[in-house]
Length: 397
Image (cartoon, rainbow, N blue to C red; front, side, top):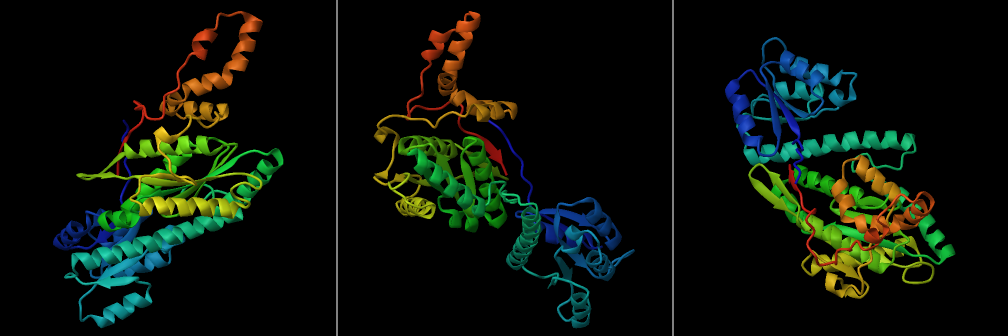
């Protein structure tokens, strides 16, 4: 079991009234992490040393440095992370002159000391999404400038790279009369999770699934995020049985994943749509292959979710004619060991040993060092329905 702590978006509240700071903090702390400062100078120092701040809420009348002075420093900052920060000004309902001045200096929004919790949370969530989108846009531009195929937000490859690389893999499969499988993985009831837990928490859940996928696929597989709660995986040299086995194993691991936020336990399930083929078989183009996977995943969601759907309908462990695992990539196994993901390697030790048997036979024939080759050949693969003692993690949001 492992715990992973993920921080909430941080809001800086700058006001010389302790009661005002406490009131705002009490209203938003379920969805946001809060930092408080008592004057503009202290608020400015906090911005310089704390890059996690995403929104500033500031009063106007304060000692040392007032709200206008803080706003001016923010908008004239050479640091883009500070210069682009959303700033909400606390003002009186009838104080139009102050609002006009603050707006001209770059204030993003205004609230009064009596603004309700629901309205305040809505504004903050909208502004944090705007701030995040701005940062992602800058990161994407930087990635584009460096010709990086990686999406800076998810850590997976971009859709553009998935399409380009997938067409290369499909052409190779045709030439070699080989296999290419596509999976589309959808988080079940994602819209309801957004309504129940808020945008930020569901984005953290989305990133958690990104990490799970990137750790479980082989080095030669390609994973990309298609939308919030939806991912595509391309698996070269993999037939329908192998892809179905992987999907069932992934689904079982996610079913056992428990995420905690404060005192709330959050579970999720996924539905997987699968399409496999090469050349003139099931799919003739990559877009057709992925499109079929999307349709099948959506059919599984409409049928209640937590399903693996292929051309023949729902796939269950008992319906697989044989339990075919994805071919083992020794490079990927070594990478998992070096990164500490030994539990993933333990799951596939029989397959790893089978892949290495020709090399071990050669070593034994050359050096006669007494390798237990017969015992290694007898290592048993776990049937598809058998419980996996290594699967299941608890993640703290």
